[in-house]
Length: 149
Image (tube, rainbow, N blue to C red; front, top):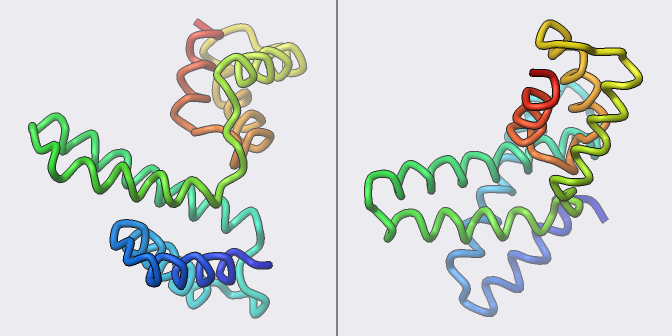
């Protein structure tokens, strides 16, 4: 079942349950998929990797918005954003723990022979490719920076 089909099934369930927060998040996902399909040059639709990137982008947007709202003391606006991020995360593969990410990055650093911050781009390129969909780019960057400095 494609991501779009899964989203439609979940939307129907959310409509029946009258879960407006979940429905809003699912509509955002559906809209983003439709927009990406129209922009995409391929006639087959999005690849699984493109779908994961799209979902990660949507989750990141929601979390960033929630963080801004919290900084401004607007918990009433932050909470729906967090709920939407949780709904969208259900469609992503299970995220790796920080310890697992560190272990993978240690292997990548050993494989590339990286020794300092000048090698960060090389390590980040391999890490984001290998951990795509399983780890947040910001977390990867933080760990790589810590390991190389």
